[in-house]
Length: 354
Image (cartoon, rainbow, N blue to C red; front, top):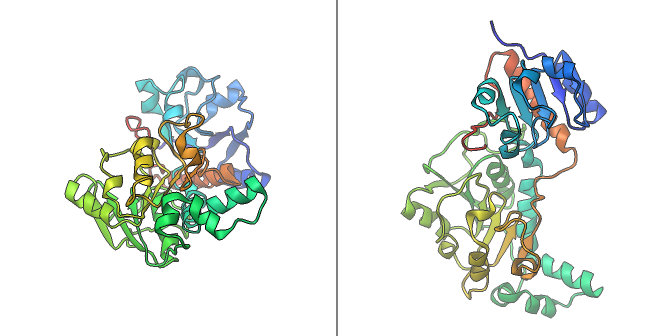
C-alpha cells in the first residue's frame, strides 16, 4: 500500500494567499507559525514545513511523530535540522526524508552577484562610502585614488560586455547567474567534478536557470589539476557557489590579473589572508564580493571590511521578500510529485548535509 501524504504541519509564517494555495494541495493543513504544535497534530503529521532549524525542540522522540515521512526545510542547508534532537538517529533517518529548499534562492543570490560585480566595476562601493561618510559630492580623482590597486590599474569604469564569467559549481545559483550574465553578452564557462554538461536537477522555478546545461561554452574538471587551472586562467569573474570545496589553495594565483572573485558558497573555500594578498598584488585581483567568509563572522576590525576593493555582506544574499512563501511553492510542488508516486524533490544526503 502506498504511503499517504495528507496531513501537513507548517511552522513558518505564510501570507494568507499562499496558505490557501497550500490548503488546495493537501487535505489537512495545520498552521502553527509560532512553532507550538499540539500533540494530536504531531501524531498525524505526514509532512512538516519548517525553517532551517527543522523540527521544533518539543519533538524529542519518534513516538511523537509516528507518521512523519518528509521534513521540508525552507533552507538550502540542512545541517541544523539534521542535528536536532531526533534526526541524528539511524531510525529517524530511515523514517524521515529531509528535503532542502535548494532552488528558491535564485530569486535573490544571482542578482546579488551581478549587482555587486557591477558595483565593483563602477567603483560604486567607494563612491557610496565617500558620499555617505563625508556628505560630499565625490570627486572622480579621489574615487580613483582611494580605490587602491583597482583605481591605479583600471582608472575608469569597466563593462561586463565580453567578460568571461566562470562558475565554480553549476547548480541552481550558478545557472541562473549564468542566464543573467548572458544578457550582458558575457562568455560563460563552468567547472564541476567531472567537467561534463549536466541537466539541472531538483526544484527549478519556471523561467529561471539553465535546464539542459547548454549556456556554458565549455566545461572543465575541478578534479583534474590542468583542466582546473585552465578554467581559472580564463575567468575575468569567478563565481563560487559550491556546497563543498575542492583543495584550491592555488586558486586565486591562477586567475588573470584584474579578475573579480565572488564567493556565495562556503567561506573556507579560500582563506581570507589569500584573498587580501591577491587584492594587494600588482597583478592580482580587481576586487572580491564575499557573502561568506573565513572565519564567519569576520572578527571586528578585520582588514576585509575596510579594503577599498571588497564588498563584504553578512551571509544575507539568500534572504528576500516573501521567502517562506517561495518555500511553500516547493511544498506545493512536492504534493504533485507525491500524488504521482514519484520521489520528493531535493532529498538531502545526511552524510553530506545537502
